[in-house]
Image (cartoon, rainbow, N blue to C red; front, side):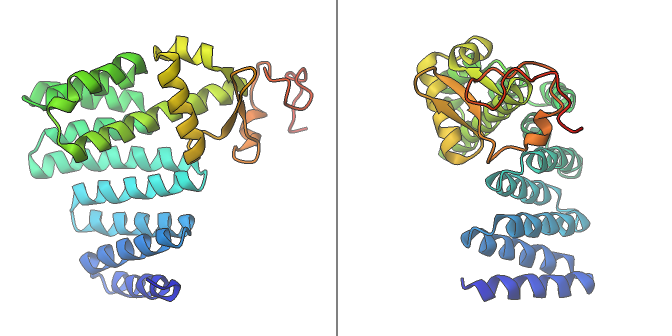
Length: 276
């Protein structure tokens, strides 16, 4: 699709939205999102997917709405908008609750739980995990167990459980989506660690996550390459350091703890209010 095709789809979507033709608006905003994403205009793509979500909700197509807003979140993360990613994940979890009621499919509780975990809303996640465990059977139990592990940030056991149990009950696409969710939750955990400390060692991450060093390094390097971990890895110290060009440094100014890396400016000035 040409760049002008993205603009045309978006303009037509706006027209259909004003006319109250919500199904058409959903499809057109989604198409515009796909088009903008191909052009790597990620902010425009994310906003288009969010508009598509809004009109899917108006159509009471709750599962599709959840999928669209998750697409928006994944697109925001390509832009380094981690907070917007988490908010969209939380919105998706709520949409899945409505989908569960509308479709009378308790398995959607599990989908909602994974979204809530990725969005950092662990209280919501645990409520949905409990609801799922009370109402579902069969292959969903493996996914419920995995969701519980991820909600407790038990990445070592979760990684082994995916390879040992989850792969036996899901198809290829389901396994791909599960591994992607695992990677995003892990990246969120690392980002939170960097917000509080600005730099962490692989050894400390291995201890806190339960992952073996080889697997941990693989996940970290992949996350850095994808941009979902805004940091760089010091090959000498094996220390993961905040990349100031890809992280909202203003959030670090609220930290009340030491900056660990010698590579950052004035590493001892942790008790200075940087906003003065």
